[in-house]
Length: 464
Image 1 (cartoon, rainbow, N blue to C red):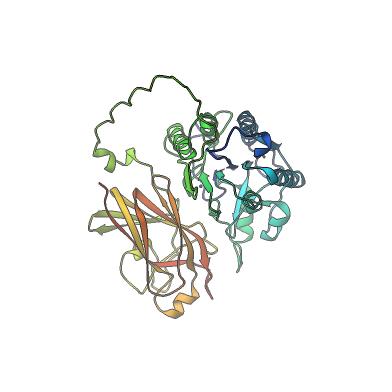
Image 2: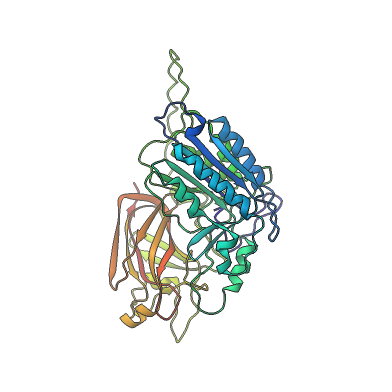
């Protein structure tokens, strides 16, 4: 997820948390099989921007950057560090980082500060940025893909952590400037999906379309948890993320749930395990508690689904029980047609669900929530507005669809631009309480920018 970058604001009690608009992006690279590395084997870029001149200042990013930099140096990283950087200085740090990567086998990029998603691309914001038009982004910001491209230029293991708030005043200003007329760029909600090479894990500090919290202390909840577990000897990175996720969920009262998406090909350990020859074997773990059926159906015991202030919901009574469909937005009724989320399961080919935000609907979503835990085997999708071929071509259709599951896993799919049903299989199936479908990229319509889906059905069975 973020604090993925921008979107609809959520309100939290100020006495406990304060919502921020910062992105924390960390790329931590290591191989568990490596010997104790020299400084040139591990390289990190750590940036924290908070003293913004044309947007609200952020208290925690400089602290987050300073503390992460110190933690990384302690475990063998050569750190390129910068705090409160303007555009020119920030570019210089990125260049310095890239040059050090020539001989590096492990690398890290950590960014805390404002971030934007526009037209499906993600941008980091220096402290002197002033953005009023989409055409200014290239002059005022740094695209995240430029940094990641340097990381993936050679074979490395890449771990990416993104933490962003969505209440971004720069984003709101830009969205207002794009609100009228036809345009090729739209300000999306959160950061867009990052297409990565094999050997990369991307972790988000919160679930899609939700607000990451700045916390009441020196660091954000996500950075606090990351610092706690970063240097644990022998801890594999997927286990590290599970611990980070558990800590953040607990500290935020389930308001924030970190996520990750991985193409790693093997185990990754940041700090080797400490050898203890002749040590007595550890005692066996205590027996697991007896399973409680109530955990599967009690909403208080599972990760809450994403929500939106403008969401539209409807119930589908399927063979296995009620499935609750909710869409982040819908297009207002026109010419006697309604475009609510119920059209996705109604079986009426004359209409469809159509998202309702300005632009092409990048970042808009539909979530399907189940009464109990399900084993998801696949999906059936009718892309676009399939009333007829003419209507289909006039409206935008989904090209890249991201499925996000309640336990934090996600999958990306490329849909075909054609009439008729498309079947997507999951192998192996995935256990989940709900699944969210996020629009990441579209086939533009010839007349309308609105993006539509005519059918979205989940193939599943009750989880064992």
